[in-house]
Amino acid sequence: MGICISIGSPEIHETDDCQENVVYYEEKIAAADETQRLGSICSHQGSRESNQDAAILYQGYGMEDGAFCGVFDGHGKNGEIVSKLVRNRLPLLLLNRKNSLTKISSAHNHNDEEEGGMVPNKDLYKWKDACISAFKVMDKEIKLTDNLDCSSSGSTAAVVVRQGGDIVVANLGDSRAVLGTMAEDGRLVAVQLTTDLTPDLPLEADRIRKSNGRVLALKEEPHILRVWPPHEGSSGLAMSRAFGDFIHKNHGVIAIPEVSYRRLTAEDLFLVVASDGVWSVLSNNEVASVVSAAESEEAAARAVVEAAIYAWKQKFPRSKRDDCTAVCLFLQKSQSLRQRQDSC
Image (cartoon, rainbow, N blue to C red; front, side, top):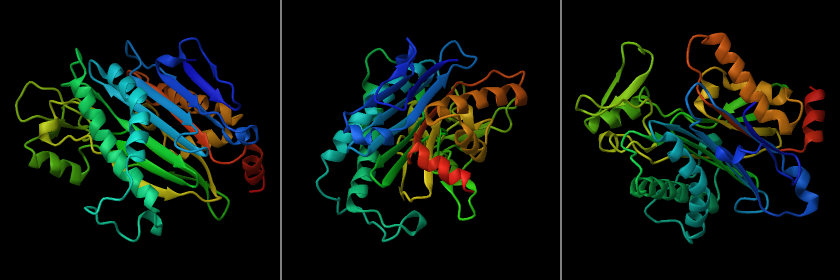
């Protein structure tokens, strides 16, 4: 059923070719903490000749109770290469950039309050600066890669970095991150952590037009706005931010991520990061429900991908199916999570 890795123990269970699209990496940890490292990752090729999605789940990232979840959806002729380059390079690049920041830049004016009225600590500000810097460097490295034409090829990036009780979210394009949390009345609620950065957003479209780019849809796809250069004959891009796509970089498309913070609570159960092949056919709440109903944490990502494939067949039986990729990271022990759900 495609490419999957599950991690309910320190062992890595994988198919022979799983490293092609998804990677799981884990730092050595104390045996007593192994039960807290629960997650899974799965990718399935769509109707294209190759799977252009890439993903990573890196446990022990930055600190013992840290993690890096990333999904990268490639597009264009060399999109498969770009997504894997980002998957392989960005986690270390981001960590190195963060570790090199010894103080907060005085050039930034930080507000006292952020999303949800939470005040991030100084370390989280360093992560934000590191994300912006690392994404810029990553884009430059792609441009300088020998024998790789990325004028009309690129990749999205949806990244969630967990550091203890905090998460930092960085996003380019239309891959998405969602948090599954328990409401006061016991309902499972899906909280969208990223914004789909596409040219139909007024602020994104305004930036593109101010850079002499065009925003319009094809006649055969009137529901999908794309970014076009001012001259005719070039390809359109269905997102407003991405790695690569250098023909659009002078016309409003940028590789600067939208970055946000969140302080985790005892009600937060799991994180899901997935490519738009999943979100095109499943809502946030549907994905959260699939994860919650999965046989185990190790089976959650596969369950999401299988649900997306089934939904594609039902909703778009005559359309080419997109690649579907999901990363699931659980924030609580299995037994604790089950007990809370059963009591509701």
